[in-house]
Length: 348
Image (cartoon, rainbow, N blue to C red; front, side, top):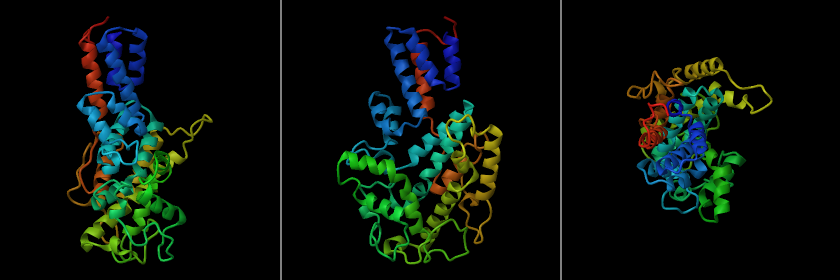
């Protein structure tokens, strides 16, 4: 029994570990604690971010505090801003989840996680400029002028205008309104900001890949600061948008749950990633592709499930970001708890 738990932990099958420990129905507090840890690890592996704060509050370990720091605040004005304050920790967690899903041979979950990585990628690019992760509590001090208005000079689509407007007042009302903003609008915020960064005062037409709507009449806040910094932000945003429109992300849209069909194979994922990487790493007319710039770290390569994913995330963020160790830390704590009762290497 104990050897089987060791194998399950090595494969990060925390749901199975929790089931085995529950079946034992032990009154030993260490085994009970190990069971609670396994349930928490399973929920974190599922990227149940809405409840990260609640999960973390149930434990006193350092990893629990780290988990709260990557959660989305449950109420509008919580002092701990979590992923609204910075997306870096959340990306470290997503990169770790990507690795563990691949280790568990779960191709659909690899594709789902790769899609989630893309959802907030333009916002991750903007974090270096905003100094936060798109926190609606601070957006009023970060933007201005035509942002979130109905001005005809603004090139935002109606959906982007709605997102921009909601980002300014999402924390002014009740929990219901704030939660609705997180559910329906926050993942679009980076794409609304992307239009503002890709303005005609920063980059001329034809200099870089055409990845969507650009702004011919930018607001003053969007063109504030040195030109070199604005061009750097523009490049990182374009790289993020290229990824969002890539073959690996498209696999998620073609992989519906159910109907017996559509689950991508490992070879299909590999082919899609190679096609994605070829597009992401292609030279740009002005030679400014951040992915091929000198100094971008190769974190995790070549052992990554999708080799180069950490390099891509780092290039978009403008800083080094690699897979975290939060879930594996919980796994190690589970082993310690069970070993304290009976060493896992010995059969029971």
